[in-house]
Length: 234
Image (cartoon, rainbow, N blue to C red; front, top):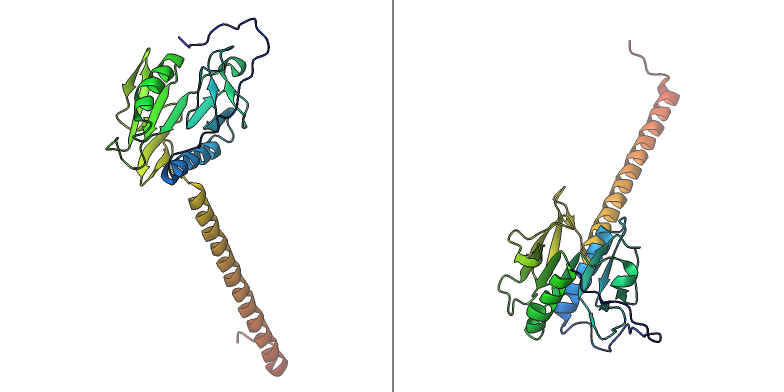
């Protein structure tokens, strides 16, 4: 049962959007968060969904201290776009997938408090990614809700996202299940764009060279006709 408490009859309640804490412990953790965010945003760009990173998730109306800030969360059936924070009772939807980019410093919270909370909120999948492999040897670990409890994911597949997940250095790689196509991170997208631009330029240069050669042949043929007359098959 989703843990949302009833509305209280009190004065207007303020729900902060920031606690002044840093986004991530290290560059590796920050990069893993941002690449996951951007890849999933691009993947779900045409869907009625939103992807948020390190923003407060409020789950009990009237109790602003009851909140959590998932590193990355995916919510379906809501208006696309960003939010300053996310209130379950206003949006009407619980996150379907949550990613925590974990470290030894957040291990206890990620393994106990957050896991239990996400289970109670009925988040369908919960993934932990340890980019440095400091406490998760395989770096990536997932849980899927079965009934009211989480069970380990053994095939690194995200059922709600219809993606296969893979450890690629210090980030998560995402692959479409229907085509096997990899979802490119921003750096890879920029490189692919550069390569495509270069291919087009080379193709344009080849076409221009072909046109020049054709023009030279036509000029040569015109000079031949001027000197010798029309060519004859006889």
